[in-house]
Length: 450
Image (tube, rainbow, N blue to C red; front, side):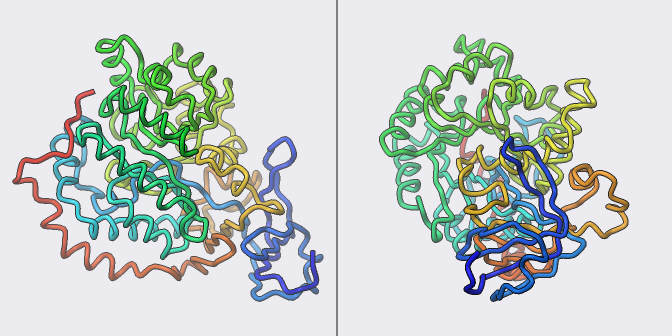
């Protein structure tokens, strides 16, 4: 470490670290030194006593860990939280969500994104992968609030060539935005709403411009069954034959991935990842979940996600981590899978891989960007601590996050948001809600027919 003052030193904490085999470990009475937005060192508290710093945080009783990553969401849909409850997915889309989304203005998107970013910062999420409309507004919110984000402008084939062109234009204009905190992707909605020709064109554009792809595929088993009946191929096989699996692709959900899809995914020449959001699958009563164990066995990283708040009611990645561990135990019939340490690996390094940031974030180590959260485990619900990994996964809550840091900048200190004004967002959303929720026009942005 250099003798010049550090920007930030966090001291007295327990630090979640990864060893050279990517195994989770914990270093006690530790310190994290941050300079120029980067982790300079993870060392002992004693070693930093004499080092000057612009700011020091005393984190005794807290765990410092990599910021959580929400690998698939629709941040502006925070404005639609609770508008479509207790419905099967086809009615949820056709009768409520897609009619309401046809009313969205850019201002609605910006307000929903602000609300979502505030919720995520308060829950220790430092980066999110978003896939929605009017994404210029979301990029502006990311720049404003200080988060990191992987953004794509969604499109349907029903929009004609303009949809695909706008998705590319957004990705090229915003790549590297927000002082490098924004990465971008092409974002076709799904194989059942985007034609093979458009998927093929998207894969070609991805190669031409060096862009990844983020889309929904094999969201549930019904989609897979219908695809087989109509096209003689599963959604994953459609992605293979259109070249999408030869790009770097993030697949949302994948609860309809079948055994016949596994060799297809294994043969993919692109960097393929899957995002799992188990709360929504439980809510829609889907009979299957993301096959995390099978995907792990073929080397596919699975990141944690929430989906949008209209389907999940929450952007809480802590809950996603807990549910992923529990649902995997139930679905495999094996209480030894997923372990707490494995769940933490999915929440950190695997999630970073899923959004293409494995060399940037996901672990607290020298040279990584300083995306850090401090978690207070002194509450009665987290005590005593016999197994720290289990405490983090199964006892800690989003509300235990005290401080959230991105690129070395403190976005929340001691539960106080520093970059977003939530009361003003809530007030304006309330004023705009009658126009947003109007379904009397009978319009939909799309039909849900898989």
